[in-house]
Length: 410
Image (cartoon, rainbow, N blue to C red):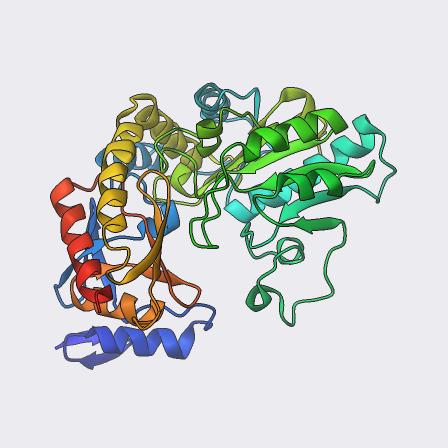
């Protein structure tokens, strides 16, 4: 017998934990019926001792795998020193973290925050203030151009410019000041720019939409349009950045630089929430004391872990792994087109796969994969996102792809 939920009972099962979740936690997610108790590298183990390959990586928060020893060591060392000061005081990790992240990303100034949505909200505020104070747009009239099918978070302002009705329904009134154009259509974006346009906010690869890679030359055209009209380019690299696509920043594939980048997820090493806005000094520098902040943003523990993440990325190992294993992933998945898949998209160790008509739904496919020891998750009705940790071995990767083939083949 053991004590579970305050009662003497037999050893708890997955069903008992799921029952607790269903009773006491808000139903804002629809998780697969697996209860994870331990994890290491690219694998997780449930409360009943079954192991699974992680093919989701916490939506890219676990690029370096579960409990990477360098990241855990950095967290443990900092836990023994100081974890929080608030930004009312300086601490010995903040400046180092900001400098090292700026050097890694080729930027000039860093604003540390916590969640990815906070980073995007911060970038929106910075772009608006820059437009008012530098570009001369009248206060309260600045606009941002965004893309349809975007995903930048779920705060009230961010869902105001989402095109996903699940994210928007019943959450109005919505924040004004956003203009939506089709992703990948540079001409439509150019036509949408007006004297009130402060910035263009885009994902280099649209993750939630199904790992959508824009047409070749799209971002070069966007950059030219922004430059010609005095508009900032904001790249949301929260899912796509930090080696997931094979480069530090996914926008690097396009040979284009943004004025502002939002970073998150993998920046916390899968240990705690860490995000940042990084960009030009003359843009981020419009913020003055008291205008924006966060009690936990840039805390010592977050900075210590973030610095360890930067050190891993500076080796180039993970970019190389994403490139080489990503090529293998895409070759094998593309071979399944016509054999259960209708389309494969993506870049690096990241793919969106559309299940062919007549095959299982995305949810059913996810459940079938779980039964085969692979954890993946659907996005939309017939699409799976495949994003294993970058530490995965080729053999593990093949095992997961074999399971996908079994599930989707007619």
